[in-house]
Length: 198
Picture (cartoon, helix red, strand yellow):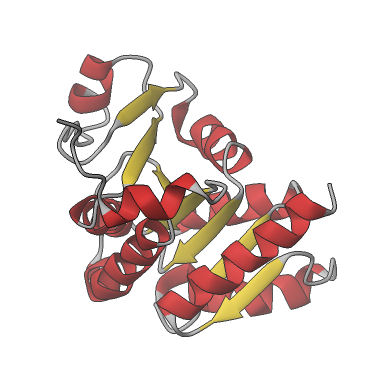
């Protein structure tokens, strides 16, 4: 007898699957405050039938990944390490096979990992964050990728408008919103439009 398909499986069979990256603070008091927002983003990505990409790290990205998995979504982590041992011992990052369906060991350090991660995604969503999250934002921005910024989430996310204005390079494909679920919907719509015209 065939196993009945879940609602999420039925939902994704007839829709294209996009890879949505969540970037955010791995540590700090701001990151902890942003956890509920991260969970809403992860859940919304999964419920829309898309794959969540993170840096296979702790904090905000991990909370998004946990929430995505809880509702039956898929997670791919991009590690700065070259091996599983280096990932857990040198970088002290979680392996969590119950959360991550795959971990890609980039062997590129944090900066190289960040570029590979955002370039492998259809869009990046920035929540809270410190210097590493800002690096992920600037990598995506310079590559003219679609970026969602969750305003009001704290950290470097709340500085992005000022950074863009100061840089004088224009808004490009950056979308701002204060509501996590609405931001995910707007990002997915923008990705769809981009795929239609490519």
